[in-house]
Length: 411
Image (cartoon, rainbow, N blue to C red):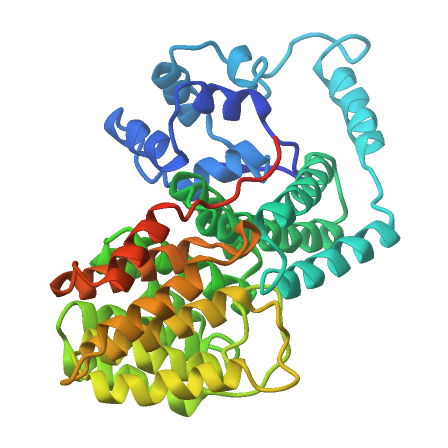
């Protein structure tokens, strides 16, 4: 039984007890199930910690057993469901009435200006993820996320809490995306798991799809291709025009790596039909014609179609370099150039020296413009160049790739 609360008061002691043991919420749920407390999920544990509801008396006893702690140490206090025999003057009824007054006074009001500024920051982060050095952007996102967390620790109106939950999810998403592109996979996964809790609570399609797609990307670059596919299928449940082409393109990439040509080609077809010109939204970057061409190129390389890959890669590079395109799209432009280099190697008549020189061009950018996806694509290109290790350009590319260091945000 889950006991609802009228106001959400986070249970910090329960959360601290879990974190002190390095347990996830899912692992706490598994532990309770093993103790015979059925029907518990990681999502329910999250709600207990956030004060959305409190555990039943049975679950409280099970939690005390799991953590080897007292009720007070886990933030459950005395026995709120007990009945006192004392009179009204000093008994439970009086104390409960006083507690109601104190609880009502705890409610804080969020300044509408503060919410508006946080919204503006999130919109700015969505744009700047495309071009601002990620190590510089991370502290700004981190500060805003901490601000939102502090506000969520207080009592808010339902409307403000929903607004803050969406902001918390969006900011946690950006923390995950930036952590991943700074090559911290552990932090990226943790931020993504938190972002998903918030996304699931508010059910906003762009955020939900963006989080699952990002988890799929992290899995893909970690070599966990089946897991990546599972995440992308989950993202597909939140289908919307903004995320649709990226989900399809990422699915095509995974299918190609797994050798599923028919599925890869079908997914590419979905991606091409879904391409639309939409403004940037808080979540995934918009999927443009240039992005689509670049995705076609990388997928065809995996499928062994060098000529098709080269044609699409050249179109992508041309689109990124046409007049009026922001010069700060360093990640997308770098990946498109590496896709062209890979296509030159995958052709029936390979040009390894040209490919290596394109690789050198990409990896010799300033440190602030370096990202994990470019580093990984560079490693893939070097593997394709494995038949020509003695070529000076290939040797030079290998050396420069070894020196490709990702920046870190200030402490």
